Length: 385
Image (cartoon, rainbow, N blue to C red; front, side, top):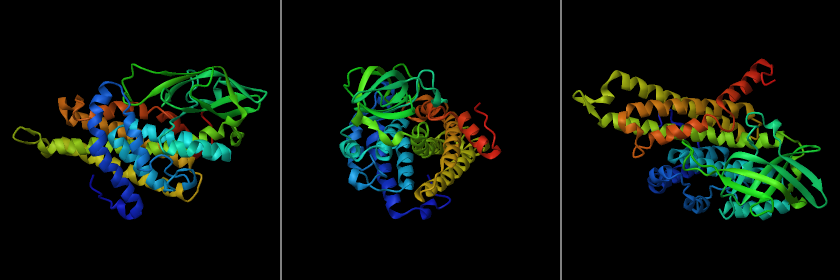
């Protein structure tokens, strides 16, 4: 997409290099896989090793733990380019980075960090994040999964639903209620009493692994307890802020792909003796799409600079995620319409993005929830109770 506002001038050479490297990879190696991957509901797990080779897993973490010590701007640009390919790719990297490696780094012991993070950065271990439950989505404080302290460990009972990477993960970051509030645990695949099930029959995020986690008297040793999680609910919410930031960039990546496809198509599609791009209604839609992408890019960039300065920016991240998921879905729908009947073909990819964005609009904070978060901030009044 044309850099009309010269945003590249706001970024470092390293950030631009990382973005362009992922862009080329997505165009050459990833996008060709997705008509079949989406059709057959298969996550292309063979790409995980390529993500690791490019240093995308643990991107912002210290080198000591296998990270690349890149900026939040670089991480956002990576999410943007991954979701140009498919939401499933960005979801995988976002979960691995923000919801699994980040809580181990932030709340774990040094032994836990050294045990898990380098292997996760190499793509040798895949993680998932167990917070959402069948009856606890927008209100995570109401989770029912419970961890009871016993000698040398904990017994966990409960279930988690709609978990990205859930059926393929080697470990889960699980949040459970205890006698002292919500706490975090690392639960490894194969642990007795821990079951991972794939969720099928989805019409969105079909090329992303989604699972259910079930805990039936699951014993987790003390060394897998995250001691830094003693602030309770604030800890998983801090992880979600990290992930939502990546989603804000990713959703706009899907919008950019949809726009570029619609623009190219409109220039080439001849009707009534001229390209449909010459008609006022089509130009109106294309101009609106470009407006919204440009505004969202600036918003995402600004939030990234705040995070790079070490500021707590959960409100700003919420605004960015809510805005991006809203406008990206509208953009994909408009782009699909410009393509006419071809808009529903996986060959053109736009309907796939449109379908995925229905989930992006909902997960990790529905659009309504993000408006309420911002509404509470600007009014000082809580509408959640």
